[in-house]
Image (cartoon, rainbow, N blue to C red; front, side, top):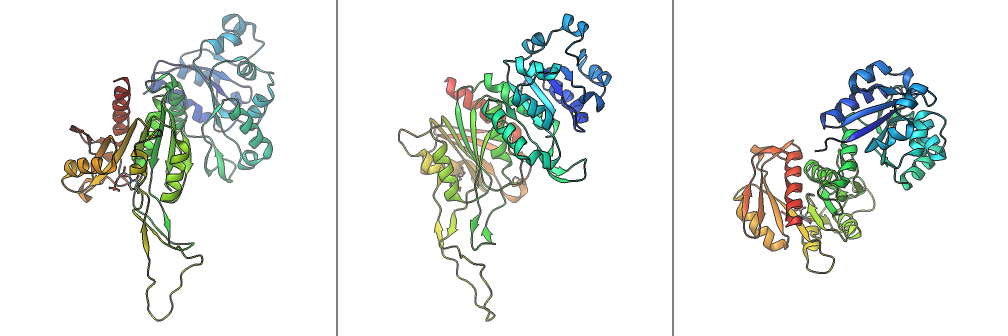
Length: 400
Ligand code: C5P
């Protein structure tokens, strides 16, 4: 997806530093070359020797080393990189970045650089939630610094919550997405819907469906990796937010439509969400109770707005390319072509969701790309590959 980029990896002092060794591998696997700076604290967690062996490069750590400066000054370290990654970015390192302090090689390079910077924070949950850190992060984001993670989970200190450094694969994907800003879809604005919607029955119950959101999230990820400025409007899923994507979390179809409208104008819209067809007309304000006499509550349903059809309506704000999905169990291509006409969209990705295909929640998908005048069947492939192939088609379409 990426490749041949030069990454300057700055490793701060945290227990997550060991994961940065795996990050080196991930970056190399996507074809990138990695050079590293190890802070004094970072060197307490991983050794320069392991880093040097993995990167095949000298490891830099000392601002005042005559050897280092004559060989590779701090300005050259930045100049010879396409992207700087700080991982783990400790609370202290983030605070010093925010303040513009330059008292060691890492912070001096960070202050001197004009290259894009990605940080992967890692710290104890209370440090992460401290107003000082929250404030520092907000300022750094405003200055254009990209942030991946942290993840939630059990931490080395025994506490539970956000603060774990994002997985190396997610950081590498974030880097690929940032560098993709020079990619095929640079300058393109994209909107993706994903996941199910939840329609409330009462405060504790809702109507939902089995959509995992995997296909929609993979498409948002692939669009961003190709350089598109991507908004993902997602119903409730168990998936992590894709890196370098603006994610708007919603629950209901009405909220999803509203969030999509707010994201306009866009050049491309992909509706992959499994939007509930109906919602309860009047969700109960209090939890519905059994009345003891065995009578059943009547649920009056009303139709939800059709987001795909709404986005496809002609008008100045209509995206140039609107793509929908059709989940069919029989006569897949015919039904999809019919849906394309009814909804007014440009392309439909039709997939066979009969139980035997295991599409819902599964990793693979078998799709047919149906346009106004042709249908093209793609072999069964991973949802991530479907996403990448679709993105290539979108890029081809735009270059016409
Ligand atoms: O009508 P059906 O649900 O089969 O259509 C599927 C396509 O329409 C998908 O692209 C889905 O995201 C979109 N859709 C929508 N809003 C709805 C229902 C479906 O955007 N209310």
